[in-house]
Length: 127
Image (cartoon, rainbow, N blue to C red; front, side, top):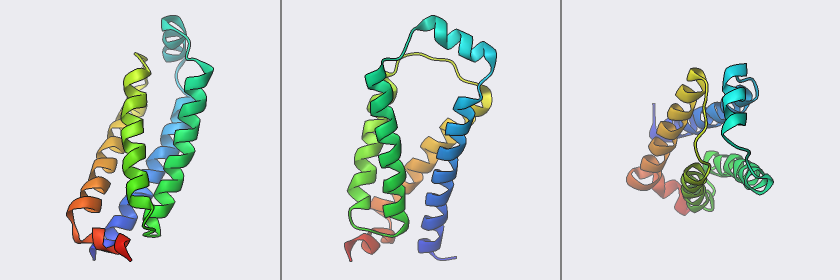
């Protein structure tokens, strides 16, 4: 299997994890929902910013899948924004399955970044 094919499959896995995370964040257990309500409310501005980032992240995955030159810096910037949003989001509880999906998503993002910047796949974005 060539590197280009592996990269595309990795992007698809990242998108699939994103969809699963959205689905499982909606269907959390009552205990997790209750706990999260007790520790504080999330501001509307933060939710709006997170949704915009989420849509932009999905668009960046499309650009990566199609090897568009804008996809490489766009994905990196959104990765950094994701880290910042996680840092300022504060503490919250999550179900174990959601936690596993979140960890896999971060690992997949790291693998995509490694391939983007440290493998021959980076030449595909120079065209």
